[in-house]
Length: 262
Image 1 (cartoon, helix red, strand yellow):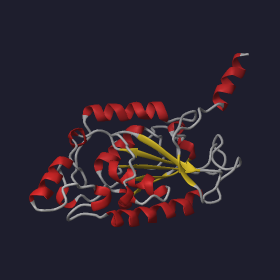
Image 2 (cartoon, rainbow, N blue to C red):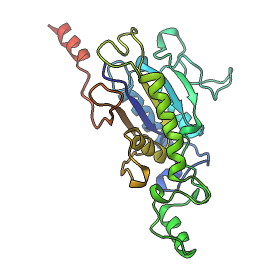
Image 3 (cartoon, rainbow, N blue to C red):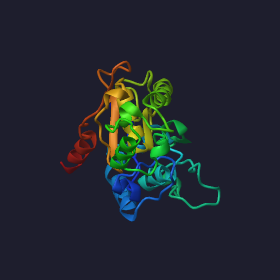
């Protein structure tokens, strides 16, 4: 297994994400296409021989917003734990037999990763925000990373809550879990990956803060609806966090298959 990783997943498409409206506290369902794409993401990226290995998940953080929670459900990770937002009698995508359970990771609803509080800008597009500011004599060259949101959060507010979460992740799940003996090995070893399901702006900010970049510099990172990003470390060192631009293909599974064909 590689060094500990954090997988960041933006919730699937909604009507507002389609037209660029800033969606913070407003509860919106995923579109039918959004649900379809998240199911496809789960099939493509989740599995013992895939990017996200359920058995190596140490913890799952999910936003309080329903669109993020639905996204987690649709990934079909095979969680042993009932989704916290479901009642005991409510049906869900949980495994129906013990053999379908693929992860023991705890699922935690986490306010620290709820979307940026857009305040007065909730439901508006960026051009609408800039027009409104110009009409009121404010700087029309609005940039959320520099200016934050009127009646909502500033870059400093977001930085504070994300830095606290990042420190907690490293202390609880990553410190001391490096090297070839770390991680999950066919249901042996200690899981060391973390999964976060949340929103576009907050996850872009999370990635920037993961590598210590100030939000005011505008991190210039993109994460499409339903997109998946990977964060990790350089040189097997917790003091050198990094954004993983591209991971290598899993080769041990391929080698086993080749060996069986001989």
